[in-house]
Length: 145
Ligand SMILES: [Cu+2]
Figure 1 (cartoon, rainbow, N blue to C red):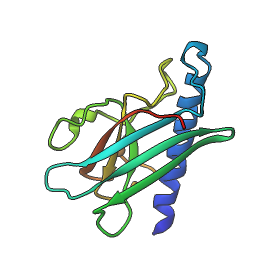
Figure 2: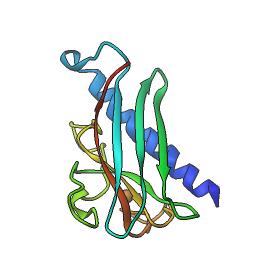
Figure 3: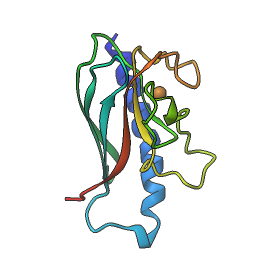
Figure 4: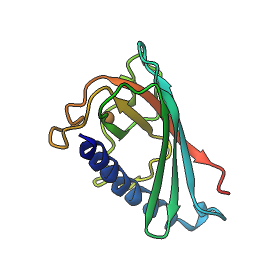
């Protein structure tokens, strides 16, 4: 059961690595320290989930650290969604999954992290059949050090 969550987590890390490496190639945007981003997760209507997800650029990829409270037992889908808008009560305003491949704009900053009620089956698209959105947080730039 744990493997499903772990697998979706790894997929997210690869996705983010693409986004971050694209951004670090822009000299004007290059920060002095390692690039860090943060998303503060807020519960959707009827949910008690909250937490913080941090992303830190490292030489071989992106480290993702999630501290989440209020999760129901079991596995939960966990994705980057295309819009940095968590205003809807069900977080539908965050849009579909963010797919960096066809875009020039590949950074995850300004998009959102969404946690789902159920596990991602890692087959169905776009949401992996992972059910309702139970938390949403806009990804913003964080202090580098
Ligand atoms: Cu999702």
